[in-house]
Picture 1 (cartoon, rainbow over the protein chains, first blue to last red):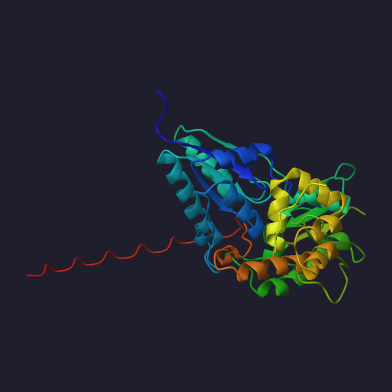
Picture 2: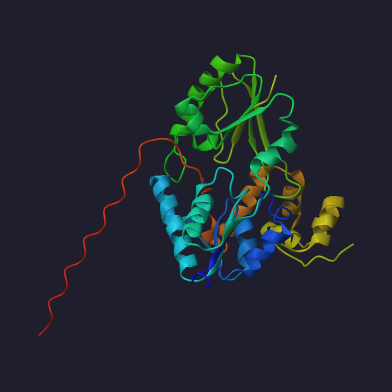
Length: 243
Length: 104
């Protein structure tokens, strides 16, 4: 006898709002009883709402100073509660729903724990866009990728020959739901740490993929020993390419 | 050339491209041609053609801010990953209200 309750599918929109949503993800959104979303771009949110009238944002769980771990717990509770109530739920996240994204994985774990069906569909991530836009192939020298705050605070060992990617550098050191001016103060400290590992002359790139068709990504290049460093945007990724 | 529904907003132009693969292809082949047939004003056409991320994003946000039904979609981009550190305290549960005294 099947367990009572619904099911969960976690999908990603990709980054570019007009062409990255896969046909499979679109079909799941259209067919779900309940659609819950967390998206970085309002055009993407409008698309999802246009595909399913039940779609609603999970953004209200965030607060500027509320620890994101509490936010994630609340988000997961809302998702799991809808599934346990019998709904076939689709959760839509931006980019790849499982890449540097807690709520999707944790919701799937919790739903499966209840004996119900849960799955994740892969999607285009900001990292995929970075490979294409910056012309990087991690094959020859390897790739190290970290969440920026994790790298900054826990200092994992680095391989200076490999490409380094630090995601979410625009939220460096932030535990709440929004960036504060302190990010601009922390960023030079991160760059100083990188200088010690990679040398003065190494080039850094602040990168942000474009969500809009025909619109260029944001690419800001700088040397690690520059006096006037750029300030990372909220969605920026810092990349140090292999020498 | 596929026909394009007239729109006054860059936001809606992008939504149209998302819903119609033939339009998306037409945009890749001839962005200026499609934009000029879309009904967007010259300034909006030029904004998209210039292809600067910050300017296009600002245009979309301005359009949404001026639309009472869509303004709610203007939110800070949110992160979905945890950061290191001690476990946060759960907020205190609010004390239950005292039941009202029954009125005579």
